[in-house]
Image (tube, rainbow, N blue to C red; front, side):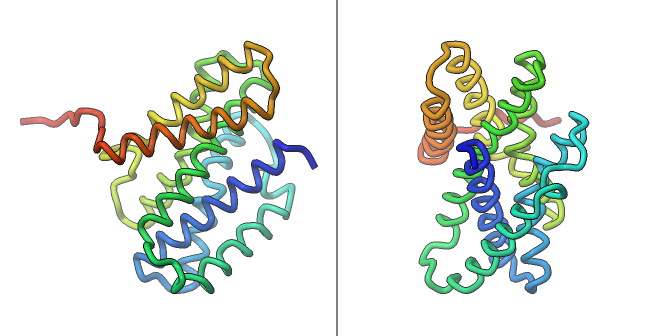
Length: 202
């Protein structure tokens, strides 16, 4: 079991918990909670695998992902009353998943020898499009399209990983620094209420 694989499972678990908390915050039933958790966890990775021609998509070829999601959802439901600040917990797990999945997508792009710009796209898609599907199913404007620095954090993290990879540094070091970069950017953006300018028609 490689560090890369462990990171993938951790990211899946983090996004599953994030999705479950989101669904419970919307007062969905258990099936709704599981579905939202599932698409949040594997939605971005599924889109990434489809557009890069990786079949079967990762979670269909490895049931460990399904097991991890199921366990994460059950734990989130069981301990929901012990989570004092639901919104803060949702933010925490969502941000952790964002950092890890940015690495996953970017690394897959590198392994396929894609152009660095495409690697950044894959990192961003892997990390943020599960949340896009989640928000659409919940009848909300996806977070990536408004308010917080979300996709921007993924882009910065992906570029960071590409630069560190070119420097031939230890891979585990690259993983840690990139994840922390994404988390830090998003934390700073939320703390100081930073956001991209809104474009609208008068």
